[in-house]
Length: 457
Image (cartoon, helix red, strand yellow):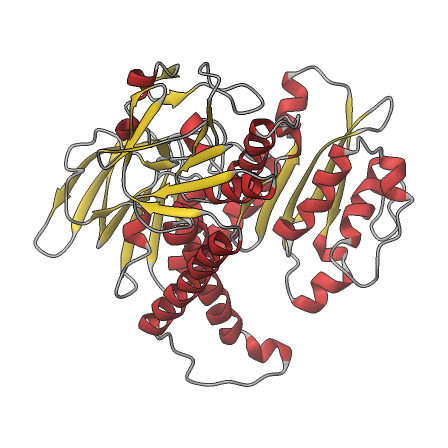
Protein backbone atom coordinates (compact mmCIF):
# COMPACT_ATOMS: atom_id res chain seq x y z
CA UNK A 1 0.00 0.00 0.00
CA UNK A 2 1.47 3.32 -1.10
CA UNK A 3 0.37 6.09 1.24
CA UNK A 4 1.22 9.71 0.53
CA UNK A 5 0.86 12.30 3.31
CA UNK A 6 0.69 15.97 2.33
CA UNK A 7 1.98 18.14 5.16
CA UNK A 8 4.63 17.40 7.76
CA UNK A 9 3.03 19.01 10.82
CA UNK A 10 1.87 17.20 13.98
CA UNK A 11 -1.00 15.64 12.04
CA UNK A 12 0.93 14.66 8.93
CA UNK A 13 4.11 13.28 10.42
CA UNK A 14 2.17 11.29 13.02
CA UNK A 15 -0.09 9.87 10.29
CA UNK A 16 3.00 8.94 8.28
CA UNK A 17 4.58 7.13 11.23
CA UNK A 18 1.40 5.24 12.08
CA UNK A 19 0.86 4.16 8.47
CA UNK A 20 4.48 2.98 8.29
CA UNK A 21 4.06 1.03 11.55
CA UNK A 22 1.14 -0.78 9.94
CA UNK A 23 3.17 -1.76 6.89
CA UNK A 24 2.54 1.01 4.36
CA UNK A 25 5.12 2.39 1.96
CA UNK A 26 4.92 6.04 3.00
CA UNK A 27 5.96 9.27 1.32
CA UNK A 28 5.56 12.54 3.19
CA UNK A 29 5.46 15.82 1.25
CA UNK A 30 6.37 19.05 3.06
CA UNK A 31 7.06 22.39 1.39
CA UNK A 32 8.84 23.99 4.34
CA UNK A 33 10.11 22.38 7.57
CA UNK A 34 9.07 19.14 9.22
CA UNK A 35 6.96 19.80 12.28
CA UNK A 36 4.67 22.30 10.57
CA UNK A 37 3.31 25.41 12.23
CA UNK A 38 3.16 23.86 15.70
CA UNK A 39 6.83 23.01 15.89
CA UNK A 40 8.26 25.89 13.89
CA UNK A 41 5.93 28.85 14.34
CA UNK A 42 3.40 27.95 17.01
CA UNK A 43 3.18 25.67 20.04
CA UNK A 44 6.86 25.02 20.70
CA UNK A 45 8.49 28.44 20.09
CA UNK A 46 5.63 30.15 21.93
CA UNK A 47 6.08 27.88 24.94
CA UNK A 48 9.85 28.45 24.83
CA UNK A 49 9.28 32.20 25.18
CA UNK A 50 6.64 31.56 27.84
CA UNK A 51 9.25 29.61 29.79
CA UNK A 52 11.66 32.54 29.51
CA UNK A 53 8.92 34.84 30.83
CA UNK A 54 8.21 32.51 33.75
CA UNK A 55 11.88 32.20 34.71
CA UNK A 56 12.24 35.98 34.50
CA UNK A 57 9.19 36.49 36.72
CA UNK A 58 10.38 33.85 39.21
CA UNK A 59 13.82 35.45 39.42
CA UNK A 60 12.26 38.79 40.27
CA UNK A 61 10.34 37.30 43.19
CA UNK A 62 13.00 34.82 44.34
CA UNK A 63 13.53 36.72 47.59
CA UNK A 64 10.07 35.53 48.64
CA UNK A 65 11.55 32.03 48.71
CA UNK A 66 14.66 33.04 50.62
CA UNK A 67 16.86 33.22 47.51
CA UNK A 68 18.42 36.66 47.25
CA UNK A 69 19.33 37.89 43.78
CA UNK A 70 20.23 41.28 42.41
CA UNK A 71 20.50 42.87 39.01
CA UNK A 72 18.09 40.49 37.28
CA UNK A 73 18.00 41.47 33.61
CA UNK A 74 16.58 40.03 30.42
CA UNK A 75 18.82 38.97 27.53
CA UNK A 76 16.11 38.66 24.90
CA UNK A 77 18.54 37.77 22.13
CA UNK A 78 19.68 34.77 24.17
CA UNK A 79 16.07 33.82 24.84
CA UNK A 80 15.43 33.86 21.09
CA UNK A 81 18.52 31.73 20.51
CA UNK A 82 17.34 29.19 23.07
CA UNK A 83 13.88 29.17 21.50
CA UNK A 84 15.33 28.41 18.07
CA UNK A 85 17.66 25.74 19.43
CA UNK A 86 14.67 24.00 21.00
CA UNK A 87 12.79 24.15 17.70
CA UNK A 88 15.79 22.87 15.74
CA UNK A 89 16.28 19.94 18.10
CA UNK A 90 12.66 18.86 17.80
CA UNK A 91 12.57 19.33 14.01
CA UNK A 92 15.70 17.20 13.79
CA UNK A 93 13.99 14.61 15.95
CA UNK A 94 11.06 14.41 13.54
CA UNK A 95 13.54 13.94 10.70
CA UNK A 96 15.14 11.10 12.63
CA UNK A 97 11.74 9.48 13.12
CA UNK A 98 11.12 9.63 9.37
CA UNK A 99 14.36 7.76 8.73
CA UNK A 100 13.72 5.26 11.51
CA UNK A 101 10.31 4.42 10.02
CA UNK A 102 11.67 4.32 6.43
CA UNK A 103 9.45 7.21 5.35
CA UNK A 104 10.50 9.07 2.20
CA UNK A 105 10.38 12.84 2.64
CA UNK A 106 9.83 15.00 -0.43
CA UNK A 107 10.19 18.78 -0.28
CA UNK A 108 7.75 20.68 -2.46
CA UNK A 109 4.21 21.90 -3.00
CA UNK A 110 1.52 19.33 -3.79
CA UNK A 111 -1.50 19.87 -6.02
CA UNK A 112 -4.15 17.54 -7.44
CA UNK A 113 -4.36 16.96 -11.17
CA UNK A 114 -7.39 14.71 -10.73
CA UNK A 115 -8.66 12.35 -8.04
CA UNK A 116 -6.08 9.74 -8.94
CA UNK A 117 -3.11 12.03 -9.54
CA UNK A 118 -1.22 14.42 -7.32
CA UNK A 119 1.86 16.30 -8.44
CA UNK A 120 4.64 17.82 -6.36
CA UNK A 121 6.02 20.89 -8.09
CA UNK A 122 4.59 19.50 -11.32
CA UNK A 123 5.98 15.97 -10.93
CA UNK A 124 3.34 13.21 -10.47
CA UNK A 125 3.60 11.19 -7.26
CA UNK A 126 1.88 7.76 -7.33
CA UNK A 127 -0.36 6.71 -4.43
CA UNK A 128 -3.00 4.22 -3.39
CA UNK A 129 -4.28 6.34 -0.51
CA UNK A 130 -3.53 9.92 0.43
CA UNK A 131 -3.82 11.90 3.67
CA UNK A 132 -4.15 15.67 3.46
CA UNK A 133 -2.66 17.47 6.46
CA UNK A 134 -1.91 20.94 5.15
CA UNK A 135 -2.86 22.78 8.31
CA UNK A 136 -3.87 26.41 8.67
CA UNK A 137 -2.50 29.94 8.41
CA UNK A 138 -3.21 33.13 10.39
CA UNK A 139 -6.29 35.01 9.26
CA UNK A 140 -6.97 38.71 9.29
CA UNK A 141 -9.90 41.12 9.25
CA UNK A 142 -10.54 44.07 6.92
CA UNK A 143 -9.44 47.03 9.02
CA UNK A 144 -8.31 50.31 7.54
CA UNK A 145 -4.51 50.45 7.89
CA UNK A 146 -4.08 46.73 8.49
CA UNK A 147 -1.19 46.72 6.00
CA UNK A 148 0.91 48.86 8.35
CA UNK A 149 4.46 47.49 8.80
CA UNK A 150 3.83 47.67 12.54
CA UNK A 151 1.19 44.93 12.27
CA UNK A 152 2.45 41.36 12.75
CA UNK A 153 0.82 37.97 12.99
CA UNK A 154 1.77 35.26 15.49
CA UNK A 155 4.81 34.28 13.42
CA UNK A 156 6.08 37.86 13.46
CA UNK A 157 5.50 38.12 17.21
CA UNK A 158 7.87 35.20 17.70
CA UNK A 159 10.66 36.89 15.76
CA UNK A 160 11.03 40.24 17.52
CA UNK A 161 14.67 41.20 18.00
CA UNK A 162 13.73 43.00 21.21
CA UNK A 163 10.74 43.26 23.51
CA UNK A 164 8.47 46.01 22.16
CA UNK A 165 7.78 48.89 24.51
CA UNK A 166 4.07 48.59 23.82
CA UNK A 167 1.75 46.38 21.80
CA UNK A 168 -1.96 46.28 21.01
CA UNK A 169 -3.24 42.75 20.51
CA UNK A 170 -6.32 42.40 18.31
CA UNK A 171 -8.09 39.26 19.50
CA UNK A 172 -8.42 37.83 23.00
CA UNK A 173 -8.36 34.14 22.12
CA UNK A 174 -5.65 31.70 23.13
CA UNK A 175 -2.96 33.14 20.83
CA UNK A 176 -3.58 36.74 21.81
CA UNK A 177 -3.77 36.01 25.52
CA UNK A 178 -0.59 33.89 25.53
CA UNK A 179 1.40 36.57 23.70
CA UNK A 180 -0.08 39.19 26.00
CA UNK A 181 1.16 37.21 28.99
CA UNK A 182 4.61 36.68 27.49
CA UNK A 183 5.35 40.25 26.55
CA UNK A 184 3.72 41.90 29.55
CA UNK A 185 5.82 39.67 31.82
CA UNK A 186 8.92 40.71 29.88
CA UNK A 187 8.10 44.39 30.34
CA UNK A 188 5.87 45.50 27.45
CA UNK A 189 2.79 47.67 27.89
CA UNK A 190 0.02 45.42 26.54
CA UNK A 191 -3.59 46.11 25.57
CA UNK A 192 -5.86 43.28 24.37
CA UNK A 193 -8.89 44.21 22.26
CA UNK A 194 -11.59 41.52 22.08
CA UNK A 195 -14.94 41.84 20.27
CA UNK A 196 -16.79 39.28 22.41
CA UNK A 197 -18.03 39.66 25.98
CA UNK A 198 -14.96 38.03 27.50
CA UNK A 199 -11.48 36.89 26.57
CA UNK A 200 -11.03 33.15 25.93
CA UNK A 201 -14.72 32.83 24.98
CA UNK A 202 -14.57 29.07 24.36
CA UNK A 203 -13.33 28.23 27.86
CA UNK A 204 -15.41 27.97 31.03
CA UNK A 205 -16.22 31.61 31.77
CA UNK A 206 -15.79 31.40 35.54
CA UNK A 207 -12.18 30.31 35.06
CA UNK A 208 -11.50 32.58 32.08
CA UNK A 209 -12.31 35.49 34.38
CA UNK A 210 -9.63 34.28 36.81
CA UNK A 211 -7.04 34.48 34.03
CA UNK A 212 -8.31 37.90 33.04
CA UNK A 213 -7.99 39.17 36.60
CA UNK A 214 -4.40 37.95 36.82
CA UNK A 215 -3.49 39.55 33.49
CA UNK A 216 -4.98 42.84 34.61
CA UNK A 217 -3.14 42.55 37.92
CA UNK A 218 0.16 42.34 36.03
CA UNK A 219 -0.75 45.45 34.04
CA UNK A 220 -2.43 44.12 30.88
CA UNK A 221 -5.29 46.36 29.77
CA UNK A 222 -8.23 44.38 28.38
CA UNK A 223 -11.06 45.90 26.34
CA UNK A 224 -13.93 43.48 25.70
CA UNK A 225 -16.99 44.18 23.54
CA UNK A 226 -14.58 46.33 21.56
CA UNK A 227 -13.87 46.75 17.85
CA UNK A 228 -10.76 48.05 16.08
CA UNK A 229 -11.87 50.50 13.40
CA UNK A 230 -8.64 52.01 12.10
CA UNK A 231 -4.86 51.81 12.31
CA UNK A 232 -2.82 54.93 11.63
CA UNK A 233 0.96 55.04 11.33
CA UNK A 234 2.81 57.90 12.98
CA UNK A 235 6.46 58.84 12.69
CA UNK A 236 7.60 56.57 15.51
CA UNK A 237 4.60 54.37 16.37
CA UNK A 238 1.02 53.58 15.43
CA UNK A 239 -2.37 54.68 16.68
CA UNK A 240 -5.11 52.09 16.96
CA UNK A 241 -8.63 53.50 17.03
CA UNK A 242 -10.99 51.29 19.03
CA UNK A 243 -14.75 51.57 19.41
CA UNK A 244 -15.48 50.73 23.04
CA UNK A 245 -18.40 51.54 25.33
CA UNK A 246 -19.91 53.99 22.86
CA UNK A 247 -16.81 56.05 22.18
CA UNK A 248 -13.61 55.91 20.15
CA UNK A 249 -10.40 55.33 22.07
CA UNK A 250 -6.98 55.89 20.49
CA UNK A 251 -4.26 53.49 21.64
CA UNK A 252 -0.68 54.39 20.79
CA UNK A 253 1.74 51.49 20.45
CA UNK A 254 4.97 50.27 18.91
CA UNK A 255 3.61 46.98 17.57
CA UNK A 256 0.20 45.51 16.73
CA UNK A 257 -0.46 41.78 16.88
CA UNK A 258 -3.29 40.47 14.68
CA UNK A 259 -4.54 37.31 16.40
CA UNK A 260 -8.14 36.87 15.33
CA UNK A 261 -7.82 33.19 14.48
CA UNK A 262 -6.64 30.92 11.71
CA UNK A 263 -8.04 29.69 8.39
CA UNK A 264 -7.59 26.45 6.47
CA UNK A 265 -4.53 26.17 4.25
CA UNK A 266 -5.88 24.33 1.19
CA UNK A 267 -5.70 26.87 -1.64
CA UNK A 268 -2.74 25.22 -3.35
CA UNK A 269 -4.22 21.70 -3.29
CA UNK A 270 -6.63 22.28 -6.21
CA UNK A 271 -9.35 20.33 -4.39
CA UNK A 272 -11.92 20.79 -7.14
CA UNK A 273 -9.73 18.94 -9.65
CA UNK A 274 -9.99 15.87 -7.43
CA UNK A 275 -13.70 16.34 -6.78
CA UNK A 276 -13.12 16.67 -3.03
CA UNK A 277 -16.09 18.15 -1.17
CA UNK A 278 -15.24 21.29 0.75
CA UNK A 279 -16.81 24.46 2.13
CA UNK A 280 -14.70 27.49 1.23
CA UNK A 281 -11.62 25.31 1.41
CA UNK A 282 -12.60 23.44 4.57
CA UNK A 283 -12.32 19.77 3.64
CA UNK A 284 -15.38 17.74 4.64
CA UNK A 285 -14.60 14.41 6.29
CA UNK A 286 -16.32 11.72 8.35
CA UNK A 287 -15.19 10.49 11.77
CA UNK A 288 -12.56 8.27 10.17
CA UNK A 289 -11.03 11.19 8.28
CA UNK A 290 -12.25 10.04 4.88
CA UNK A 291 -13.45 12.55 2.29
CA UNK A 292 -16.13 11.89 -0.31
CA UNK A 293 -13.35 10.43 -2.49
CA UNK A 294 -12.67 6.98 -0.93
CA UNK A 295 -8.92 7.04 -1.52
CA UNK A 296 -8.44 10.50 0.01
CA UNK A 297 -8.43 11.37 3.71
CA UNK A 298 -7.92 14.70 5.48
CA UNK A 299 -6.99 15.53 9.08
CA UNK A 300 -6.28 18.43 11.40
CA UNK A 301 -6.67 22.13 10.73
CA UNK A 302 -7.40 21.78 7.01
CA UNK A 303 -10.75 20.18 7.90
CA UNK A 304 -11.75 23.37 9.72
CA UNK A 305 -12.54 21.71 13.05
CA UNK A 306 -10.79 22.30 16.36
CA UNK A 307 -7.39 23.67 15.33
CA UNK A 308 -5.10 22.08 17.91
CA UNK A 309 -1.95 20.05 17.37
CA UNK A 310 -3.03 17.15 19.56
CA UNK A 311 -6.31 16.88 17.64
CA UNK A 312 -4.43 16.68 14.34
CA UNK A 313 -2.11 14.00 15.73
CA UNK A 314 -4.95 11.80 16.94
CA UNK A 315 -6.83 12.25 13.68
CA UNK A 316 -3.64 11.32 11.83
CA UNK A 317 -3.42 8.02 13.69
CA UNK A 318 -7.10 7.34 13.04
CA UNK A 319 -6.85 8.03 9.31
CA UNK A 320 -3.77 5.83 8.96
CA UNK A 321 -5.41 2.99 10.84
CA UNK A 322 -8.53 3.09 8.69
CA UNK A 323 -6.46 3.21 5.50
CA UNK A 324 -4.60 0.11 6.66
CA UNK A 325 -7.76 -1.89 7.37
CA UNK A 326 -8.35 -1.12 11.03
CA UNK A 327 -11.45 0.54 12.46
CA UNK A 328 -11.07 3.77 14.42
CA UNK A 329 -13.11 6.94 14.82
CA UNK A 330 -12.40 10.39 16.23
CA UNK A 331 -14.08 11.07 19.58
CA UNK A 332 -13.89 14.78 20.38
CA UNK A 333 -15.27 14.57 23.91
CA UNK A 334 -11.83 13.81 25.38
CA UNK A 335 -10.13 16.71 23.62
CA UNK A 336 -8.56 19.12 26.14
CA UNK A 337 -8.13 22.84 25.49
CA UNK A 338 -5.16 24.56 27.13
CA UNK A 339 -3.99 28.13 27.65
CA UNK A 340 -0.38 28.54 28.79
CA UNK A 341 -0.69 31.66 30.90
CA UNK A 342 0.00 32.12 34.59
CA UNK A 343 -2.16 30.70 35.99
CA UNK A 344 -2.51 28.03 33.34
CA UNK A 345 -6.01 27.31 32.10
CA UNK A 346 -7.23 23.95 30.83
CA UNK A 347 -10.56 22.28 30.27
CA UNK A 348 -12.06 19.10 28.89
CA UNK A 349 -15.67 18.10 28.34
CA UNK A 350 -18.61 20.41 28.90
CA UNK A 351 -18.32 23.90 30.30
CA UNK A 352 -20.97 25.00 32.75
CA UNK A 353 -22.38 27.27 30.05
CA UNK A 354 -22.79 24.29 27.72
CA UNK A 355 -24.44 22.16 30.40
CA UNK A 356 -26.96 24.95 31.06
CA UNK A 357 -27.65 25.47 27.37
CA UNK A 358 -28.40 21.75 26.94
CA UNK A 359 -30.75 21.68 29.91
CA UNK A 360 -28.67 19.10 31.78
CA UNK A 361 -29.33 18.64 35.49
CA UNK A 362 -25.83 18.94 36.90
CA UNK A 363 -23.81 19.53 40.05
CA UNK A 364 -20.56 21.45 40.44
CA UNK A 365 -17.61 20.98 42.75
CA UNK A 366 -14.92 23.65 43.21
CA UNK A 367 -11.65 23.59 45.08
CA UNK A 368 -9.33 26.61 45.30
CA UNK A 369 -5.58 26.20 44.97
CA UNK A 370 -5.22 28.54 47.95
CA UNK A 371 -6.19 25.51 50.07
CA UNK A 372 -3.71 23.15 48.38
CA UNK A 373 -0.43 22.58 50.23
CA UNK A 374 1.75 22.03 47.15
CA UNK A 375 0.37 25.13 45.41
CA UNK A 376 1.13 27.15 48.53
CA UNK A 377 4.68 25.77 48.62
CA UNK A 378 5.09 26.74 44.95
CA UNK A 379 3.72 30.22 45.52
CA UNK A 380 1.06 29.59 42.86
CA UNK A 381 -2.27 29.79 44.61
CA UNK A 382 -4.49 31.59 42.08
CA UNK A 383 -7.33 29.66 40.58
CA UNK A 384 -9.30 26.51 41.23
CA UNK A 385 -10.40 23.12 39.96
CA UNK A 386 -14.01 22.94 38.82
CA UNK A 387 -15.74 19.60 38.24
CA UNK A 388 -19.13 19.33 36.49
CA UNK A 389 -21.12 16.09 36.80
CA UNK A 390 -24.57 14.74 36.09
CA UNK A 391 -26.77 15.13 39.17
CA UNK A 392 -28.49 11.75 38.99
CA UNK A 393 -25.58 9.40 38.27
CA UNK A 394 -22.53 11.55 39.04
CA UNK A 395 -20.97 10.98 35.62
CA UNK A 396 -18.12 13.39 34.90
CA UNK A 397 -19.25 15.86 32.23
CA UNK A 398 -16.41 18.36 32.35
CA UNK A 399 -13.35 19.40 34.31
CA UNK A 400 -11.86 22.88 34.16
CA UNK A 401 -8.69 24.03 35.89
CA UNK A 402 -7.13 27.45 36.34
CA UNK A 403 -3.91 27.13 38.28
CA UNK A 404 -0.47 25.53 38.49
CA UNK A 405 0.12 22.49 36.26
CA UNK A 406 -3.40 22.78 34.84
CA UNK A 407 -2.29 21.77 31.34
CA UNK A 408 -0.70 18.61 32.74
CA UNK A 409 -3.46 17.67 35.16
CA UNK A 410 -6.18 17.93 32.54
CA UNK A 411 -5.04 14.57 31.12
CA UNK A 412 -6.43 12.68 34.10
CA UNK A 413 -9.74 14.46 33.60
CA UNK A 414 -9.80 13.51 29.91
CA UNK A 415 -9.22 9.89 30.90
CA UNK A 416 -12.09 10.08 33.40
CA UNK A 417 -14.43 11.27 30.65
CA UNK A 418 -13.15 8.61 28.22
CA UNK A 419 -13.87 5.74 30.62
CA UNK A 420 -17.18 7.35 31.65
CA UNK A 421 -16.04 7.65 35.24
CA UNK A 422 -18.31 8.86 38.00
CA UNK A 423 -17.48 11.17 40.87
CA UNK A 424 -17.42 8.15 43.17
CA UNK A 425 -14.64 6.55 41.16
CA UNK A 426 -12.49 9.69 41.37
CA UNK A 427 -13.17 9.96 45.10
CA UNK A 428 -12.11 6.33 45.54
CA UNK A 429 -8.78 6.98 43.79
CA UNK A 430 -5.90 7.88 46.12
CA UNK A 431 -3.82 10.95 45.22
CA UNK A 432 -0.27 11.47 46.45
CA UNK A 433 0.29 14.22 49.00
CA UNK A 434 1.44 16.90 48.61
CA UNK A 435 0.54 17.41 44.94
CA UNK A 436 -1.55 19.93 43.07
CA UNK A 437 -3.39 16.93 41.57
CA UNK A 438 -5.08 16.36 44.92
CA UNK A 439 -7.23 19.37 44.05
CA UNK A 440 -9.11 17.35 41.42
CA UNK A 441 -10.23 14.84 44.03
CA UNK A 442 -11.07 17.64 46.48
CA UNK A 443 -13.22 19.39 43.86
CA UNK A 444 -14.98 16.08 43.29
CA UNK A 445 -15.62 15.73 47.02
CA UNK A 446 -16.92 19.31 47.04
CA UNK A 447 -19.55 18.39 44.45
CA UNK A 448 -20.97 16.05 47.12
CA UNK A 449 -20.54 18.59 49.93
CA UNK A 450 -17.74 16.42 51.35
CA UNK A 451 -14.60 18.52 50.74
CA UNK A 452 -12.05 18.05 53.50
CA UNK A 453 -9.76 21.05 53.21
CA UNK A 454 -12.30 23.84 52.63
CA UNK A 455 -15.64 24.53 54.30
CA UNK A 456 -18.49 23.02 52.27
CA UNK A 457 -21.18 25.28 50.87
